[in-house]
Amino acid sequence: MALEAGSCMHEVFAAVRIWQLDHIQKLPKHAEAVASRIFSLGRWKAAVRAATARNTREQLMELSFEILHSSGFFDDERDKIRTMSNMEICSICYIDESLSKMENWPIYVEDKKNPKSVVGIEQTFDVVLEFVDGKKLRYVGTIDGLVENRTKGILVLDENKTASRLDQAWRDSFLMANQVSGYCAASTSVFGFPVMEARVTGLRIKSGAGEDVIPLDVRRDINFVFSWAHWLRHTIELYEKYEKDYENAPRYTHSCNRYYRPCSLIPFCADTPSGRAEQWEQMVPADPSPSERAVESL
Image 1 (cartoon, helix red, strand yellow):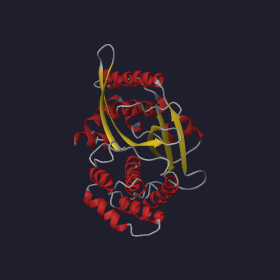
Image 2 (cartoon, rainbow, N blue to C red):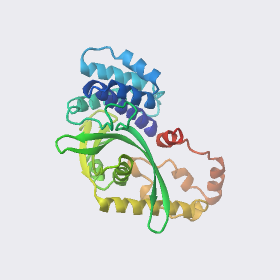
Image 3 (cartoon, rainbow, N blue to C red):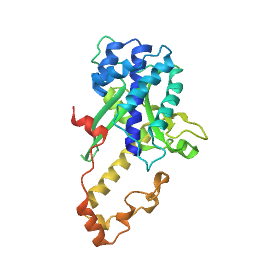
Image 4 (cartoon, rainbow, N blue to C red):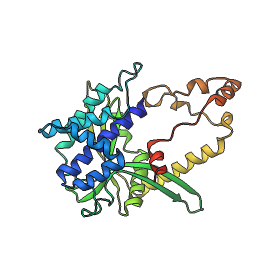
């Protein structure tokens, strides 16, 4: 549910950026091309038709709600946090946060005269890291946004994060987060110019006590990139070593309750060797992530 709700909300974030490209940056053909790539043109036009309000804020709300309701997401009675009504509230919070900043944070457009040029909205990357000893690793992901910080005159990564809590621990995690470092490195490679700063916008899935939207500005440098690359290689080599020998893989039990909830694989790990073998035979391949599906379609 966490992945499904997060994926659904990222469609809302993309829709708000496309609206900005059309109405604030006055690039309707670029907006249509991006919408067709992300949603299909039919779904996007249906969402635009549903946004009939004259008031800007209400128009964006109607657009976002239509994107939510056409996403295929549905409530699960076992999850009282990631619900459609809560995501509607989150969408309103995000719209209120974004509207006042659109003029000063324009979305990157490679060529304003060419609607098919690269635009900084939901850009999938598929890059190869090559180490000095010849080791190569494939790195796949999706960049939520690339925007210009007009105050500084630089282009920055624009990342969206959804969470059930936005406390100080959540904020501090981005001081070191490997994902930000990796995405800065990938963006630099994909776009062809340095992207070493990021604006991370955290959004609470459930509205309540505390802040519902938190924007964070974080920086990276070459040392962060090297550290991320070494971590990535270590992680993959650990996987490769124990891929067919999971019984002898080291157990990092501090991760059993990471992200404030028990890991879904605890029943597997806590079983006997014979029980794990039986469970293993019943497992099926996981569905590709949204980034993997996007790369496959290229």
